[in-house]
Image (cartoon, rainbow over all chains, first blue to last red; front, side, top):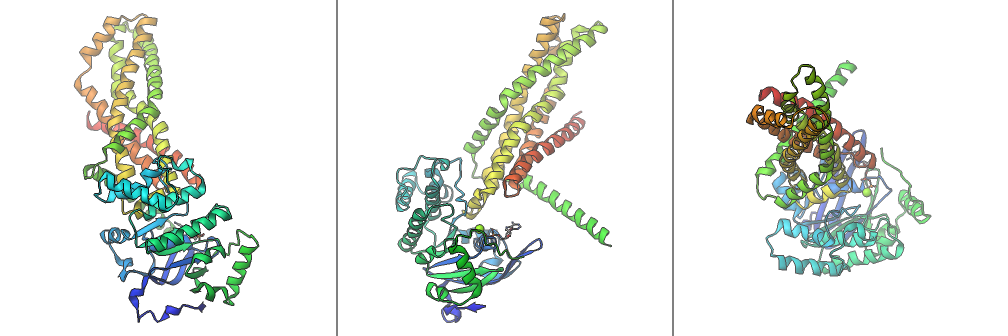
Length: 269
Length: 255
Ligand SMILES: Nc1ncnc2c1ncn2[C@@H]1O[C@H](COP(=O)(O)OP(=O)(O)O)[C@@H](O)[C@H]1O
Ligand SMILES: [Mg+2]
């Protein structure tokens, strides 16, 4: 375990971490998917989680946004231990989140405008005009102006990701979670989405947790990197620390990625 | 010991699954009664159910009535009581065949489509997306459909009944030898409010059952393409079984 975490003296400044995960474990049937995950996400930074496909990255994100409950371990968000919350508490905590799902998860019966406006319409008492202003502004921020009346199926993959990002941002969350925001995009669009994520993170002063397979391109817009392997964080640190680490598994993972080996599934079991 | 353990685990799993199935209906119905109401979503679903099933209902209704007209006439003729044809056709359709056949048809068309729709929403994480927005997917996806089923099934059954009675008249009176006057007089003198009420109650119960089963199967579909197709099949099969079981139970209660 090459733990390069520099904030290991977390007791000194607990408020500096927007998210703290401790010894998180979760089992599905006979598969220990999360096997003691520890992770710190400093407020106002982008932490990128990488790892072989099937290693549990999505499952971890779904624990962070409380779609799944752990068998043991704790998740602390802004100082609140969310693993013990009832459903009212969970709904309150979710007000802080924006989530971009791996598959985009746009409602396909709604237009782009309706999709992006949906959280405002359903969860706030803003007037139609206020909502319209906010939606137009957010669509502009992700470079989708003029696409309001298109249905998700009429958009390209990159545009769908942008629309999903706009919907995740519409309520101005504190914490943005992104599950493979660039899957299925060509390198040019991947770079564009990466920079869009960095820009919105800065503009809206967000804390972001991103799962990505675009190694090493995604490191350019990451503050910290966590390498997930066998259900735990094998390596955590700043981009420089991780890139210069001598961890064998990580080197193998990087090499596999670089040689275009898409499915180096060292699935934990 | 292993066998007993396995049987025990199986029984526990089954009871838990049944519990979830029932709780699903309860939460769906609860959100129908609790504001904020979603009338637009309900109307949309009524329209979808109608658009999916109306043609089929008309077609099956017509053929059912025609078959009853034909068989009813040839049978009654042996006893010289062709005059009772209208009564027989109407009572059989209104009390029994109308609600059951209409519900089976709607389950096959609209119910399976609904299971597939919700199943693919689950597979593409749209249901999760709602949950993360602190919205309850049951309120948006399930409750409007159950309410739409309870409203649209009696309407579609009514259409089935009328078309079926006309089909019986067409064959029995126009093609065969029964008298049109006898046919409709028999219906108006013999069919009572109780018969119509029984048919409507059945349609209402079947509507709730089909929507409940279809939504549940879609909602709990495995998150892959095969999961969605399995969910649609199971939705139709289970709906059909429960329709026939409920047909007997409602009939026995309202006898
Ligand atoms: N709901 C679930 N039930 C059972 N197994 C699951 C479930 N969700 C994920 N898994 C399993 O957990 C493992 C990790 O999945 P996932 O987090 O999606 O991987 P990835 O790192 O590619 O995002 C996979 O082997 C998957 O089969
Ligand atoms: Mg994943």
